[in-house]
Length: 381
Image 1: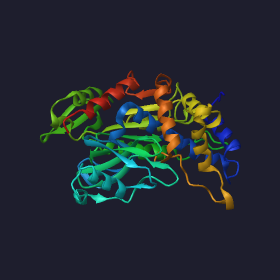
Image 2: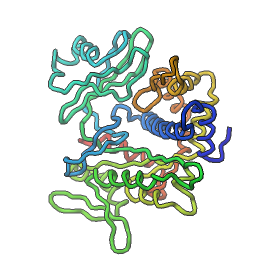
Image 3: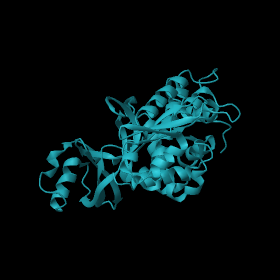
Image 4: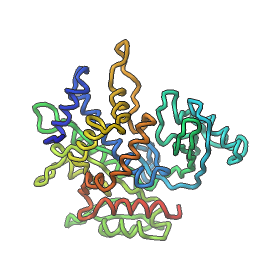
């Protein structure tokens, strides 16, 4: 199935899935935004950074912790990780996970009381997974749980102790085109919001010289290092000097909707604002988004039918006219759909990589971005 634009794809979703809503096109537009977030999440997960991920974390500005910003994804240094097997009696809660850790001798009895314990369900009675499920946290550390395997009798869970401060963050930006308009009315405001966050959270700050060249300013030992930004970013990431990288946060933006954000001949203001603010700005192509929707949601192979069902059940109206629980978001995902999405991304890595186009830095590839994240993940935090 081919779609000339994301706008046409949005209309298809409006006609076939969201026809029961008051504003079908707006509902399908919101769903497209959710799908961009899900694609980004499973991409980073497939890159091997699942153990490092958090979702919707409040991230403080650099040297100004009175102000924090909610970011969609953050990637954190991993301190420790352990695995446990737990009987599959639903729901699987924080309390049950800590009891299993104590039983296996992996933590001392009540050792977790030094943390602020969260009342979370990693797996609900409806078999919905909470992605990057936070179990407990204190000022410096966070305990996060992920499901690794499920044989219907036992569930293998990985518990990770992460550092609270991340070394990278990602945000997804998408605004749909309204009928009769060339672009959405809030595109520039959303771009400015994303740009402000991207510019404020990292110790590596962006400035321009009198010739318009983007430079970096990095505070180290009471002084600033000034260099061309691209060169300084590479130097910081490759450095073994902890003072160079200890407060860096690699900022990554993922944008979508080709017709709205970007034209190859004339990048619009919104795109320019974002590309000048994020360390990396990656574009999810119309073709990639359409392929994901076609192969998993509209016309899936038989084995991917549970993914389609989880999506449709999230937006369908149940008995009594009440909307059903959403089980197809970056935070909550139907368990069968979760395992199948991981399989889809694993089996289609080469194809999925072609869905992504790096807008900035120019002349670099998504492979280079992955390498930078990998280098940062292995540093002595």
